[in-house]
Amino acid sequence: MKRLILFIFCCIMLTAFASFAAEGKALSDIHKASDITCADCHGKMKKITVDDNEVSVNSSCVSCHGGMEEMAKLSHEEINPHASHLGDINCTTCHKGHEKSQPYCLKCHSFPMVIPGSDAPEKKWTEYDPKAKITRTETTDVVVIGAGAAGMTAAINAFDAGVKVIVIEKMPLTGGNSMLAAGGMNAAETVFQNKKGIDDSVQLMYEDTMKGGKYMNVPALAEVLAKNSSSSIDWLTSVGADMSDVGRMAGASVYRTHRPTGGKVVGAHIAIVLRNNAKARNMDVRLNTKAEKLIVDEAGNVTGIIVQGKHSGTYAIKAKAVVLAAGGFSANASRVAHYKPEFAGMTTSNQPGAQGEGMVLGAKIGAEMWGMDQIQIHPTVAAGSRILITEAVRGNGAILVNYEGKRFVNELTTRDKASAAILAQTNKSAFLVFDDNVRKSLKQIDGYFHLDLVKTGNTPAELAKAMGVPADALEATIKTYNDAVSAKSDKEFGRPDLPRDFKTAPYIAIEVRPGIHYTMGGLLINTDAQVMSIDGTPIGNLYAAGEVTGGVHGGNRLGGNSISETITFGRIAGTNAANLVKSK
Ligand SMILES: Cc1cc2nc3c(=O)[nH]c(=O)nc-3n(C[C@H](O)[C@H](O)[C@H](O)COP(=O)(O)OP(=O)(O)OC[C@H]3O[C@@H](n4cnc5c(N)ncnc54)[C@H](O)[C@@H]3O)c2cc1C
Image (cartoon, rainbow, N blue to C red; front, side, top):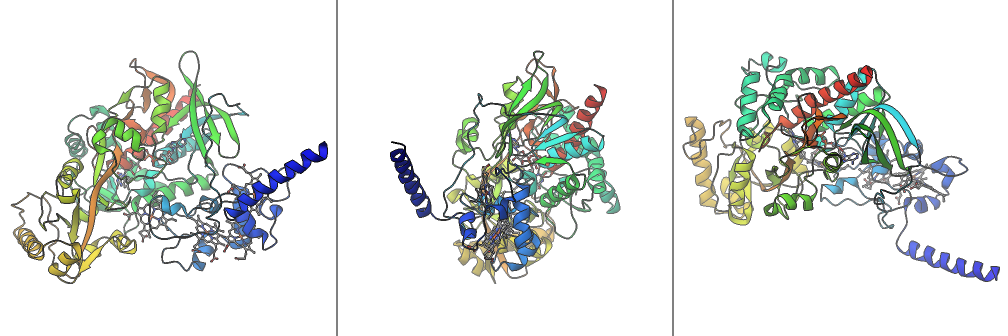
């Protein structure tokens, strides 16, 4: 009898193995061919376990193959998976040991990129089971949910104030949407504005923010944003960021958009600087770790969180203060459609993790939500992609042209108006049109060439042909625009800033469509970054910062104000959380 069972068991196992093999090989099988076994990747353990950060397996990859920098030198591909704006990330972000390997780049890009081990079966996160056994309980002072700019800023500030901090991030890398910001960070009365002789004031930034937000903003929050923006630039500089260049984005009265000099993309720069700061402090940043629930006591005060680690399972972290910095929900198509049915089916500019779980965590314990239906679409996401074409392209001179070859809007108007104008055109799309001088003024545009998002022509007529628009119309549009630039006045659409005319070939076009970009709504906070409850009092021990909150931006967020918000409210949340811990 025993033998029979064993026989049946073997048959089942063989069939299972055969079907597994038929589906292709995972990396561990591929390595077997080079006589590399379990212990080479996992070390000599009795029972193999992997930590959620996958530190041990990654150090084994690096010990045989080299790190990202060395790997980058080996790559023959046109676009190098081992050297990108994501910076130095885990090998296992893309290469999996026992499941389907997937280039993480393709979560956002559509270039051809193949990876060994890509035909192995895929494994997914297990759904959180509220009844799941809590396998262990850890204790800390402050736990921060989300490792974007707001979360990392809060964490570093709390850590530097002398308390114990754990940061948790559900994705396999830090950075969130913050890593994608490409325009810059708004701030008024800064050292860098001063150096350049730019006349700006906190009051003017406040007024621009309120006007841009249709005066729906919570005034006190907009005030905190403007007032602290300059010291937030100083703080970023003090931790090693370069914010010395000053440009201008739509809706701002003056040049106040700060970014690195020399064309480094601002968001990736800040995210990598914050990542390196956490590393230098040896901070506890846990990747592949998802917040599932806030723990509250009978009085309704938050006392910790329950998380799910990709490998380590469900566990609790008891904390004296919790900072929610889990970002917005622009990548959650069904939730966006719930609040704005007219946005159903639109693309998004956001990272795939922007699902809005942080808001749900707060709402479930009675947090007040502000303006959940205030959703911003960005006018210029490259057609057929998730790649945002930064506003700086228009800021530096590009115009918007429709399929009839004509301009149709003041390109520097607010995002909602520009988006609505594009959606009213033929094919619900438009082209950003500019010349080689504009290209030279903005390094990111070389990236759009690299990503194959552009059409070019040596004359306006040639460009028109490449775009599929009437040549005479485009020629006339460019001539009229050049005249407006010489006259320093755009009579047709009242564009306030006319930095460059178009006279230098090649002429360039990028087709763009609006995409879901930013969720203004979220957890209502007070000026101390405490999360408010529906009965109007702050929820004990709970802070929030960044896109997970609502109120700062009102009905429309100005470009450059969000990174500013993450740093300013991140500093406030982190500092106040640390002070609370120290007062206990
Ligand atoms: C393409 C693009 C360009 C932009 N350009 C600009 C710009 O030029 N200037 C500007 O001011 N703003 C810009 N923005 C907006 C700005 O980048 C974001 O709004 C801002 O960075 C949000 O920061 P955050 O820290 O609040 O959230 P994020 O940076 O999104 O970080 C939140 C993190 O929380 C994680 N998380 C979510 N749920 C959980 C959970 N349950 N458990 C654990 N972790 C979780 C997410 O994975 C993410 O890493 C841009 C946005 C995009 C998408």
